[in-house]
Image 1 (cartoon, protein in one colour):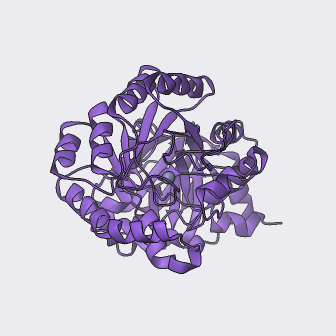
Image 2: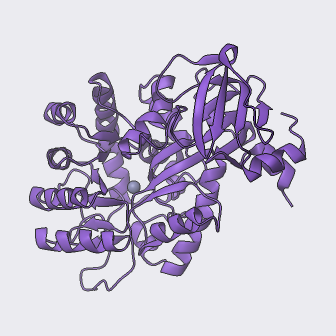
Length: 433
Ligand SMILES: [Zn+2]
């Protein structure tokens, strides 16, 4: 795309309106792609989408038309399971040793990497101190580039659970990835404190995790009343919830509580599937969590506990996703990136969802329309549809034929957020130093 510098500058300023012409439109909702389509953005929102045969040029002198030359137009991608503070740590306690200041700087830099990968919205599901809220606010204020962030606080975890990495004789004062609760009264207090501190989402750890020192993935570490208390309180304040569930019962407790999303679902039986079908929860299976260990193996310095659990979990996890997909459970993309696969390679999750059995279209929906539903922001993002925010990516290639084109930085021609050009290979070539 030989876009002149002046045009890129105008696109960066946010033209009114901005029209993208002659693109192959994949709307994020599963509609049949439009082979020769247009998208009109106005006031930071999408005003209209359609076939070129129905296009009428806006009358304003300030409008800009950009011919994308048959490239693919998609909604800005969404990652529902991010931890911006993850930055190459091999264990959770290594992350806990990281200072709040360093963790916040890492999160800020990683937000930029995610945006450059075409991800215009992410949900951060666990941070150090309150870093995700601070980064969200800095981006919203226009101080630094980054995706819109649905921010969580620390991961709410019981003693000995996912968020508790300390030796038994030590006491946690503050900081770290986890906040420790025991009993519904603790849960209520922590959820309300997090809401006071500005979170959009509450993250709980209801089961163990491979990388944790104490609890195993198949253990349900939180009681049902603790989970129910957290979910109901978050909802009362208009916040969403995400629950880390790798055991059969954790999934059921979180579904019965009405959690907006279930993370991982490494173990999922028929009762769990039936609960999904009765409710409105979305599954975020985080296939990168599994496949990164299988692919990177010993380079990750895996501990024996982690290696053993992953070996047990692999077939169960793949069966969970296959069974959920066959049963029509909504599946959203979340990469859990940053410690194994680096930030900015978020579209690997789309490839891994295809590897786990989803069709390319459903894997793309998982990172667009269904992801927006998981975040309860389907009115706002996730589709090329009139009324939603004008978050659009222009991709060189056909992701329905090969979803890995979404991972190729050189093919991510333009990234548009709120109707403004914010990143993309063309953008960087023009503006780099
Ligand atoms: Zn995670």
